[in-house]
Image (cartoon, rainbow, N blue to C red; front, side, top):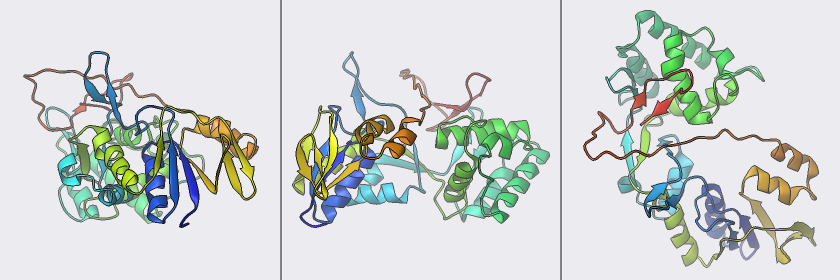
Length: 313
C-alpha cells in the first residue's frame, strides 16, 4: 500500500479509522467530509446559544478493543477521557443489574443473583436462558427477532434488562432487532473476557476522544483534509478511480448508506440498491441542566414506559 493514493469519503469514526490504518501502511491519504466537523454521529456540535454539546449520547464498553486500540495509536487520552465502570443498569432507587468485577461468567451469575428488584423465579429464568444461549454457541435461527428469542422470559427481565441492552446496542426495538446480532453482542460483552462489559463513559466532548487526536496524527502523517465538500461522482478508471475528476488508486466509502448508494449506483447497482434499502432508527437526546442535581451514579436507568422504553440519564 506504500505510496498508493487512497481517498476516504467520510470523516466519521469509521472513516478516520480507515484513514489512520492506510496512513500506517504508507499510503498517501485524502479524506473528504461533507460536514464542517469530523466525527459523524459522535462529534461536538455548537448550539445557537453558543454551548458546545455532543451530537447525541454515546457510550462505549470494554469489548470495543479495536476502538480503544485506535485511540491509543493516535495518542488519545483514554484514561482521562473515559470513565470506566462495571456494567450497571440501575434505576435511581438502586434496583437493577450490576456486574461485579471478575471473570465474565461468574460475574454475570453473581450480578443476576444479587439483583434485589427481581424475584428468584425471574433470576433463574434468565440464568436458564443464558445457559441455553451459551450451549448453543450464541446462535439464533435466521430471521428470529430478539422479542421471539426472549418471549418466554419474565416481563420484568425483558423490560429492565433485555430491552435496554437491545436498544443500547442495536438501536432497534426487540420486536424488530435481529436475535443473531443481539446474541453476538451479548457474547462479546458479557461472556468473553474480564472487563468486556465495563461501561466507558465519556468525560470529554466526543470530538476530543477520537476525531481531534486522529486528525493530529493524520496531519503529522501528511494526510490531506477536505471538509464541507460533498463528493459528486465516482467512476473506475484504469485500475483506479476518478473521484470528482481526481485519480486515486483506491476509494473507501465510509459515509452514510444513502451517500454510499448514490456514489456506487453506476458501478455496483446491486450493492447500491441494498445500501439504499437500509432504514435508520432515530434517537432524540434531550439535554437538561440543574446545578443542584446529583445522580446516584454516573448513568441511571429511568423507569420505562410503553412509549419510552430503555431511557437513561
